[in-house]
Amino acid sequence: MASRQGARGSPGRPGGRRPGPGRRDDDRPRRRTVSSGPERSPDGDRAHYAGTATGRVDVFDYDREHGLGGRRPVTTVPEGGGSPDDGPTVDAEGGARGVLYGGGAVHRYAPDGALDGVAELPVTEVTACAFGGPRLDRLSVTTSREHLDPGAEPAAGALSACPPGSLGMPVREFAG
Image (cartoon, rainbow, N blue to C red; front, side):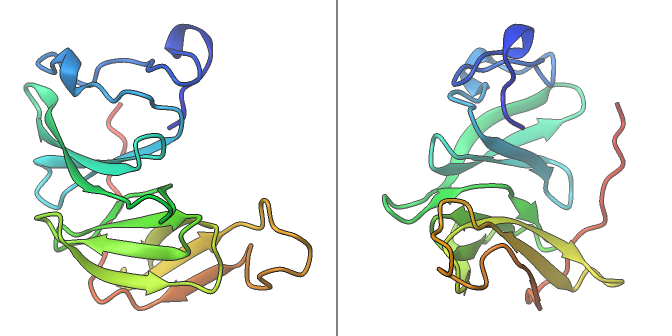
């Protein structure tokens, strides 16, 4: 969810509404120029958030009474390893998958934040991933041709699918 100009914020500055009455100002995502999430854990008590500007995937605690709080990093992508782009996508085991735009990979982080899976792709600009299939047992991955010379990386811009090693979760209905 990228910030918009005007009342909702300006580029590089946070905007939008606070997701819960108990959330503290220090939990608010900062430098939210390109970000994705939140995507909740299977039990609904955590929300994962990827921030391109920060190079991190963070997790928040969540409860219905207080909303989001307790922000902390799950992982930081090493310098030159790409940026966490669209994602994270959380699986039924609570693992978060994030794509690395400029890094040519999809990473899976265990619920404790440890990197426990890497799917490398033959392209650098990986843009998003999502679970699909009747059993949510396929991981679809999108890529981009942006900033590439003609003829470079022939698979760039394609949609790929692979067995992820864990099942996805059904899409939650929007309650708002």
